[in-house]
Each structure stands twice: as C-alpha cells, then as structure tokens.
Amino acid sequence: MQRNAWRAVLFDFDYTLADSSPGVILCANTALDSLGLPPAEPEAIRRTIGMTLADAYRALTGSDDTAAREAFTQAFIACSAKVMAANTRLYESARRMIPRLAAEGYTLGVVSLKYRSRFSGVLEREGIAVYISVLVGGDDVSAHKPAPDSLLLAAEQLAIAPTSCLYVGDNRVDADAAAAAGMAFAGVLTGTHTPAEFIPGTRLFPDLDSLSAWILNDETTR
Image (tube, rainbow, N blue to C red; front, side, top):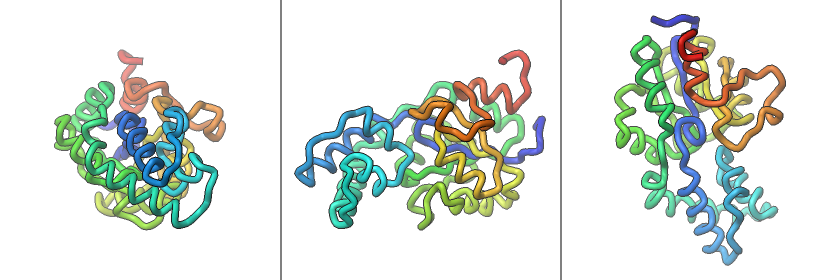
C-alpha cells in the first residue's frame, strides 16, 4: 500500500541502480585512443558518468573541437555496444528495492542518459525488467538532462502527472532535471557526487535501502 502521494518512482541508471564504470572507463579510453590521445585516469572518467558524451569529452580533454568531440562520441558508442552490458553490475540494494516498491503499488521506470538498449538488457539479465513499466534512454530524446524532456516523456508514457512522480538520481544533473520537470527528487550518494554538490535542502540518502525505508515509511528498516 502506498504511503505518500507519489504514484510513480523513476530511477536514473548509472550510479543509482547500477555501477557501469568498468565499461565506461574502457570505452572512454578506447575512444580517446582512436583519436590518438592518451588514456584518462579512471577517477576522471568516473566523474563524467551522468554527462553527455560531448560533455565527457570536454571534461577529459579540455577541448571543444566539434569534429573530435563527434568522433569520440561515435567511438564510445561503438565500444559500448560490445562491452557495456557485460561490464555493468546491478546494486544489491536495487534488487531489494525494485520488487518491494512494485509490491507496494508504485509504478516504476528508468530514465537515463545511457542508450536504452545498454540498460534494458541489464535489467532483463538481472530479472528486474518485469517490474519496470517505462524505459527512457538518451536515444529517445534530443534534449538531455538537465532538460526535463526524458522525464516528461516517461510521465507521458505512463499517463501519470509529473507532480505524482518521484525521480531518484545520484547527481546534480538529475536533481535539476527533476526540478525542470516538476517532479520531486531524492538523491542517493552511491556515485561520485558529494552532498556539497547538491542544492542545500535536497533529500539525500546514503543508499537505496535507506531511500526505500523513507519512501515506505518503514520504521523497521531505518
């Protein structure tokens, strides 16, 4: 039984439900190598997770060269198609939370910058897809987070008002997208962002288990 006004809970994917950093690091450095550039440090690449590939290229190289940025993007996408799913690990807390929220009557969705095919296969592999009613990837919209387009598309496909949705993510881009879409937001500190990188007053939780307890108002798991 739902204990609040939200009808749907939408999740970011990377660093919210799963860790795909091994695949991202591999593909980012493969793309850099294809341009004749040196590899980037793993931690620097991890910090780009949640960015568009164009922004990731800028962050890793300091360059805004349009042709190089597009070449990096295409090389990353080609690598990702081969290795990303196999190098992505679903968080154990996600395995616990997703079925529980579904059993409590929440409609669930995943909204990510990642191409839909990159995370849909992971959800299928891990037995979680059966609980998910909508998937929106970066290839489904032209304007990416922090623009609200992907979140609004998910709400539209669910026929649920944005104000009746909670979006869960791990970084400020996710929070800004939720605000632009008119959705409530809750952050999990399972990625690279620290509390100081969010707007003061943002609801933040150390992991999905504590977030689940808050959503369900379950005193036994706090």
